[in-house]
Every structure is written in C-alpha cells, then in structure tokens.
Image (cartoon, rainbow, N blue to C red; front, side):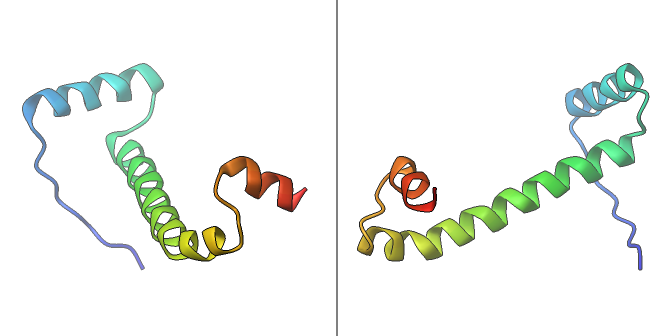
Length: 72
C-alpha cells in the first residue's frame, strides 16, 4: 500500500531540492523518499544503540574498538 504525503518546504530548501533533482536527473519524490529512508534507518540505529549501550558497558565493551575486537 502506498501513502501520499504533502510537505511544505521553506523556499530555499525547495529551490535546492529542485536543483539537486535537475543535477542528478531524479525527481523530488525519489530524493525525499531516499532521504526519509536514511533518516528512519538512523533513528532505528540510535534507539538500538541506546537500548544496548548499558549491556555493552556491563560486558566491558566501552569503545567501538572493543566491540570490533570482540566480534573479530
């Protein structure tokens, strides 16, 4: 199922979106869908990181280096 969303953009942002669309040969809808997809992925990642950080710290995994070392 698809959903239609109407968004009001500040003029400067709308002009920049138009310019990016022309420069890349993509339509505005595709650019916004890709951008929203990335935003939602990052939001899921931040929620997961927030939930797992206390468990990682309790296991002594404080830095990214600790995590990579433990997983390799």
